[in-house]
Length: 298
Image (cartoon, rainbow, N blue to C red; front, top):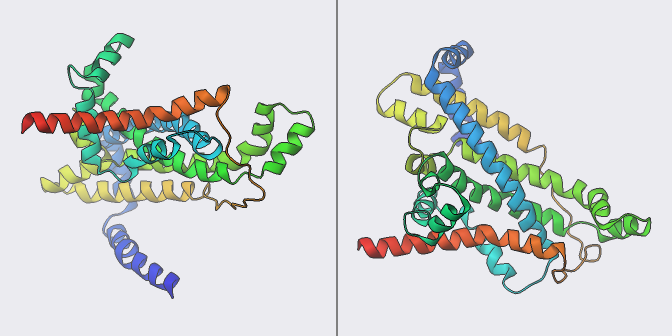
């Protein structure tokens, strides 16, 4: 009954409107729009490349975070995990405003970026700021999904590989990576899709760019008939991405008798723990900067 109810709700709120949109627009209209309209091509091209960059950073920090959360035990681990996955629940407008406040002139983050050799304005407004915000969202997505898969890895497979003479990295590649990479790919795919269709973050942080969703909204507000075609094109893109992402989603089997307990960080583990703390530090900094700015403006 529950499955039937869910299917009915999905049919009413998703499939029905999409089908109605598909009946109203021919496939040739979509192709002609992409070929002839430079705004559509620019929106998709910019969205894809900034989403790819954000997803790449998300994979780097997300995998380090997943390992740290699933395999290590140290003070503050749960707090860091909660902070790192906060972008999943934080409204995109709040996240964008926090990033903007974090790198505003005179803040410690702005000074640090200047010391490294970058222009802080690039992280306060523009494509760089959008990538920072979307990277936080991607890190949360990859870290959350991959950590569950990492925690469910059968420790006996790792022990068997080590017994046969494999080093720590080779054992991880043989026994751990096959279970973790599909989860990481699914998390990165979800983050990529979310970033390409982002609206709130791009509306606040991007200067002269917009995503396909933002383009559809702008065209609809102005009464442009292309809005329906862009919306249909966005639906097709979302469905295709969703079909690809779902191929990587697997339900991990968590058996306490087969998994290994968490251990204290040592050696390279400390590097992973340090990298996993970066997204949490950015979230704390952005929240603090946003609160201070609100106090000053009040």
